[in-house]
Image 1 (cartoon, helix red, strand yellow):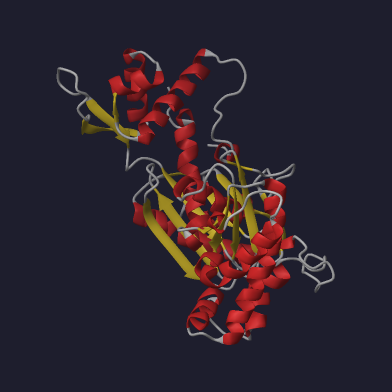
Image 2 (tube, helix red, strand yellow; image 1 turned 180 degrees about the vertical axis):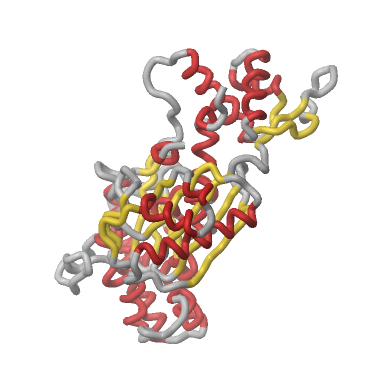
Length: 410
């Protein structure tokens, strides 16, 4: 599986189809139907338009590759005769391995072909200013333990990172909150996996993407994301994913979604990016903690704010209201420009939503006046802070389902 497979899973092979290319496309067609729900061979043939013989041959290839299993009798179809045997995704087949580098944590997740979580690891660690090699060493250990717990053989690794990755997915161009620039992610992770005794993982394809992009994709795949929506999230910084027609809008070089650097007050304080008045200076972690009077306190910043907001601390409530106003201002500009069906709050914002939403709703109502808008279109992700890591892991198995010919040779 190549890096581009997770990014563009809908296509298998471009151009005229050779016999091998046609079979590869048909493998994807059959597995895609089975992935929706267990089906008999006859049902797969009816839904795909392939002959029963062709489906049987393709199914045997998928079974041999460990992607499909015979899952017992198929559901009754109302026809006379014995029901066929249902084909389903193999819960012990190739899995998806997600990894996450956060400013204050590392994460690892393994999902099976059905997208069900088989292992989940999160370790609190301060990564700001650490050398990439040291972070990768800790991450490699975490990945190895997650895979061991899952009992699955991953088909690939996708890494969620808080910065600019670009279309290639190979280099982290800039992550201001980590203090990293031009870090080769796959090349940096592989030697640490070998050093951690996970040489088999070091041979897997490694892809990376911005954490907000992966959170937005998870919202589309696992949450309630419609065809067109704007996903806004925060950890240390503020990011967004723009989903149009069910697919991520990446921009010309892959840098779309830098929501935290939209100017909300052009004459405002200087941002780490070099510009003035960016959203991050009003709604990012450091800004909200500063406004709330909580700078320097130990612990998770979202939990610190939520606990004190629940206790009714006025300064904290005012800080969150101010962040909500800034978020609403930026979101209104995005809504007027992009016309999404919905704006979804994810990441740390999902936990803080009760105190952000009122001010956001007020700004959106006041600023989105040239098109219909209602408070119901501003929603909260049920995935919360799990979204980016889930998106990373699930993206791997979706790529397998979209092109099983990568694994089912024959």
